[in-house]
Length: 138
Image 1 (cartoon, rainbow, N blue to C red):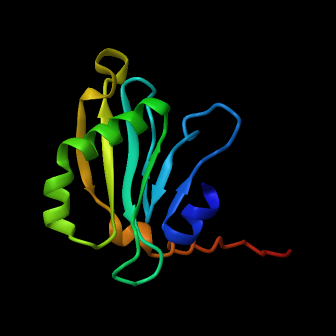
Image 2 (tube, rainbow, N blue to C red):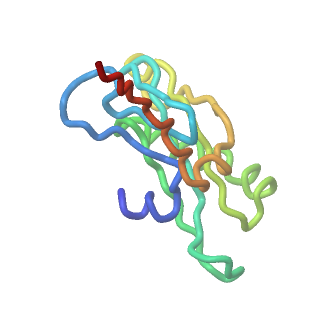
């Protein structure tokens, strides 16, 4: 999965640090970070991708969530909105960021569209700001 995302979504990074912490599982899309609050607020990417620019290329749908329930939420979102998405995007690739609200109470049923992050997700991440070193010598 990581190799596919690096190749097709160079603007997306996922914190896969095995150590627990507030940034674990967080998405970075372009210059923005999206942290999960398990069971309360979680994020998932829903992407329609094709390899290359060929019109006859078959699309692949990617569901990449911070927890398993968010993948289920993205699948349901696609099933409910596939006609609208097809009208809007046609045969083009897209990447949507969805937010799953209060999954501990509502499961995968309450989902809101955060936004279309196609441009940020398909562009390389911005270079980190250079760190300046004080080189004062006495």
